Image 1 (cartoon, rainbow, N blue to C red):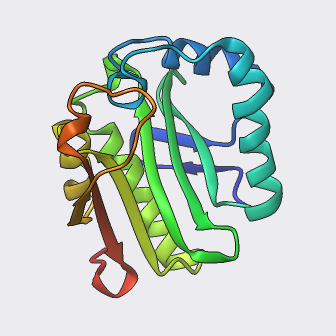
Image 2 (cartoon, one colour):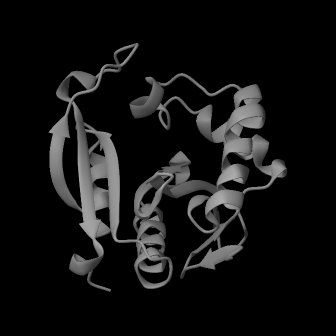
Length: 184
C-alpha cells in the first residue's frame, strides 16, 4: 500500500485526523464550494464525524483507491485533495477522479499534475480500466483539468438537486478515459 505519491511539485498522502482543520478551511471558502454546495461551507463536525471516517474506511477497504491530501513538495503547504476511488464497491476497475484545491493553488497546474499522477498509478499499478470525472457543465476550470489530464467528454446529464446551484440548470458533464486510450 502506498502511503504517499510524489510528483514534481506535489506530495499526495493519506489523510490523518490532524487534517480536520485543513479540510474545514478548504470547505469554508465559498468560491471553492461554489459548484458543489452553492458556496455553503462544510461544518467542522461533518469533517470530523463523516468525511475523515469515510476516507479512513476507504483506505482499509480499497488501499490506494481513495482520497489523497495534496501538499506542496517544497514547504509542505496544504493545497487540497484528490479523489481516486471506485464508483462501485464491487468493481475496482472503474474509479472516479475528483479534486478540490485551495484558491491560491488554482491556475498553477497542480490539479492537472495530481490527476495525471493518479491516472498513471491507476493504469500501471492498480488495475484500473477506466477513470471517470464529473462536474457542473459551467465549471470551465474543472473541465479544463479533466481535458489536460487526458479525459474526454462523454455526456451532459441532469440530476435533481434539493437546492438549485446557479448554473445547475445547464446540467452536469461526465468525462472519461479508458486504460486502452491512455497515453503516458
